[in-house]
Length: 144
Image: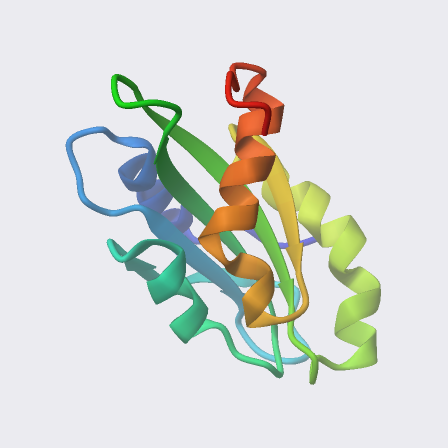
């Protein structure tokens, strides 16, 4: 079981969800290679592009991101995604615990539209994620 007792995780989660703040992502990492304790590592307002800069290829991390997109000229939508990052250089034992730990993280980062498994930074490009969000939202009138 993952230790999510860091109070900063919940504070950042509320900040990303709040309409009145610019913060639109948070990143959670393991305290160390051998620890199951998770801690808030970073937050930001630069969306998926900025988040990708903070991902470490040797780590497994979790992220929560607010994504804004438009279905047409009249409407803007904001949806949330849950990202499970497993860098290409992540250690085997850490990878083995991810499925169990991601369930623990989901109990804290509860509300999201889609889960995005990411193994490379290109897995977090905005266009394909917005396409997934449109499909999940069910209100796509342009055939996407």
